[in-house]
Length: 412
Image (cartoon, rainbow, N blue to C red; front, top):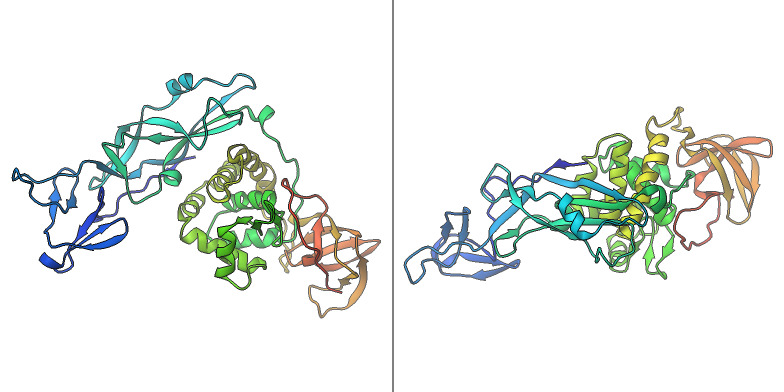
């Protein structure tokens, strides 16, 4: 799916190697270069070719010195623009692929409002296509760096890309089911209400969290160097702990995810907010989130697996949101769960810890959940029907990727 490209801001100034900005004219002008302010006493000269101001002034010949490279500030299309598939043992050569790739992409140049075609070549992202044994490859456009430079956006996340992949029927591990887990509905609601995503985009996030952590906030991975819902790794784990004292709770982790999306990963949020609200949109959201936010090993292959999980499992589950009762419970959580805590888990008469206890579930026992709202579950256990706190119930089936967790205790 493609979304609209990034239009240059009206009046914005982009520079090749630096931008000079006059604060009060003459001696107090400043040069912005590499993010630092450098004092300058020279005036500003506007480059008539690109509408970009440069600092160097009049050359010895008496002519204005123009910028050496033209600036690209947006793409007419972003995201996936073409997919090429091949059968097992019939991987196409790089030469044959180049014949199928577009010769140009449309870009916005600084100071120009209309997109123009630019001749490009295509480069495999992160690996040697010919030598790799992977089954999914991404290609991004490259430009003549002596003539063009990208400014004001990320070439990695804002540029269009091509996908070359082996036929999914033989190349991609499919996840046939993903039973609702403890925090799933909370994550879905957060994506809808706080992140302003549509249902398809939220399903894409769910597919990734299921594969990363099974929605467990205490999930550990990568040799105890990654943690939580999104398996924040090393420095991002440190950032999570610095951001909130509640870093071990779902509320703290979701708030941190929102902070990342609104700052360093804003292009991810922009993309997900623009996917179509349908099954294909769920696939696109999951694949993009995997490639640009989670970024696991073998991300190309895993992006396809997660895309189909979002499309085939989560989208049907949340498309209609089930039949919801007055307490917000619906059958999207239905399935078999286990109480993996210690002692016993109370079965209550209503959606409250103050309601009457009408039974209990012993440690290690399985219960049938008929509907739930993310906090309370309607359960059936040995002929007793009532409600249990979902905080202490875990779906019987686990996620795609192994994680390590600590034991939790229940409402006893």
